[in-house]
Image (cartoon, rainbow, N blue to C red; front, side, top):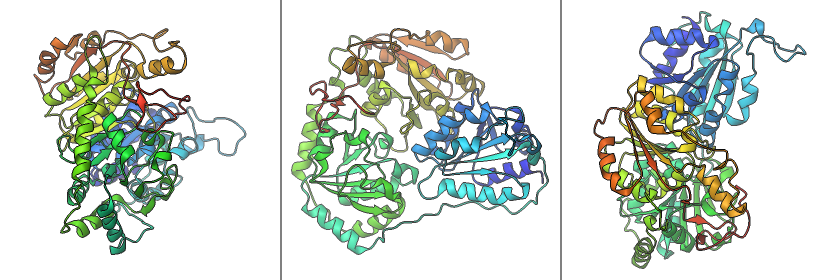
Length: 573
């Protein structure tokens, strides 16, 4: 069997139904094999970065590694941002690049390049991958594929890259029996009744306990197990940005989203808690703020598969180095028949805080459409959506604060890499992975980075509902300039602009509309969903001066947030 045929057959065996690519000479054999095999849908994108983002989102919703292909040189290097997104957000992915023929490679020659577009991509992306592979012998490929998929899935998931010279892609190799690859987990902590009893005693002694859930619950496909655990112990739940979909919006234990732009009531609760069980979250600076003394007198159990993430910034945690699903399964066995402790005073306090600080009142006098209020309205009309995708910017924070996600709905955004331009191509991967409509929410700045994927959506008639919250600026950085640069808006408002996206969408053959006031919202959302299986773009115009509030006052405790509290130093991140 030709190597490229074997490669495609192997990928299909792993449950990969769609792959993402932009064609190029050095992957011509692979593209041809995909066509003749016929069982995998080939999603041709208009930029390799888009292919990498689509593979990222496909993996998040499908539960199998995302796969993207790119040719050598610029094709391979254009994958880098998406590879980084998968690495930082713990997404299993296999990136496969074509390389120039072996006889065209420079090897040890004292030259920069021999073959056209020859680029040593494995050396470039090594720090952003769990492992990289250079295929030097065609017969090594079956073993490399087994290892690559196992590495991507096992432990803390992440991306791998396989670089295959073009001349090897056409070599015949044995048609070995191909098996489904399963993840492997290692944990340093022995989970036993001593641990569970210690947690039980801490829960009984606590007055203000919280569960903090992070993306580790999603990346380990453990949402059901997490909800069981929360319900067994009856502890209120706060979420990181990457896990706002871990608990339904209407769940009685849900408190809200915490962090740099977290719901004010949730951050206050985080600050006042005395016991925190952290499951699959890194406790990074965007979650806790720069001032960490708040956490010194709290009992914290920290569950993470990666030892280095525990007792890193927040010290004194009880380390539980274990995969999240294994921890939750063990905890659920222990706590299933236990009578949970009760926290009536704490629960009343949480409800009072939520009533005191509603998210729709954080923006005072929005002078038009209030984005927080709009996102609640969008949620109420988007029950058909399998996922919401948020790009990067102020709208991303409004989404985390105000979207109402219900059972089985996903929230996808680019967290650690924080790449503008993520959401539109990621929406392609999400909607084909789920086979459901998705809602893609962008700012005017980020949307322009991969605007060309409107053609991919139109060509495939994908059910992507696109919302552009257009503040005619790069709003998050503009807000930063207000705080620290005396309102010097260079490159955020001065020297920046955007087209009329309604007209752009229509040029691509996608129906679109624009709204500028609250009274238009209900009718516009009805039109958005009037044809559920077709794409649609809604441009929502808001004031350029609306800020994303609340926001942690940098250098102060997490409970002290702008605009009522002011930062005491410039943000370092």
